[in-house]
Each structure stands twice: as structure tokens, then as C-alpha cells.
Length: 113
Image 1 (cartoon, rainbow, N blue to C red):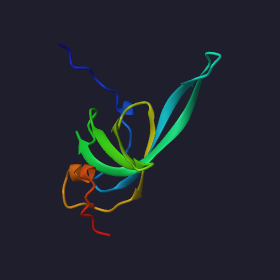
Image 2: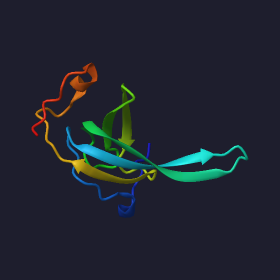
Image 3: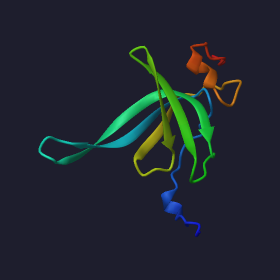
Image 4: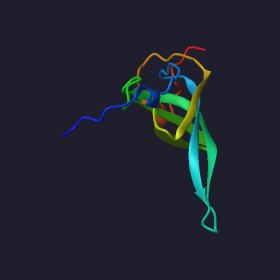
């Protein structure tokens, strides 16, 4: 099995992402209209980072959680994906733990304000 090589221009310059931060992720979405035409738009997903994996490496991911209409929604974003337009930190509040999976159960996050 051959290990793929990556060019430096494929890596994105992303901000520091830690658990507890509130981020806004801009992702490219392809819509297909009724006529069959493809349109590309930017969809924004804003929520709290509950986990990061892989750091800033090529295979790095970030899990973001938000509450939408009373229902928790989580998305895992590969940070160097060409579909990710940009990631911006809205609020940098550090958490006491590296993984905030306990927020799924409805408990209040232990975050310093």
C-alpha cells in the first residue's frame, strides 16, 4: 500500500480549535435543482466544539454540536477538506476536559466564562 503524498497548498491555515470553543464552520454544499442544474452555496454551521482528533494533521477532524429546534445536532468536519471554506472562532472559552461528550446528556458544560 502506497502512502499518498500531499502538497503544502492542500493544507489550510486554520485557527487553534479546542473543546469548549464556539466556532462557525462555512461549508460548500452542492444543490441540485428540479431542472438538474448543480448550484454551489455556502452553509454555515455554528456550535460548540466537543472534540478534536488528529490535531492539524491532514486527517484532523473537529466535532461541532449545536441545539437546533430543541434537538442536538452534531457534525464531524475534516478540517482540510476542500469543501470547508473557512472556520472562524466566535468565542474562545476553554473547557476543563478535552472531550465534552457529557454535553450530549443535557448537563451544563463546565466552561469558564
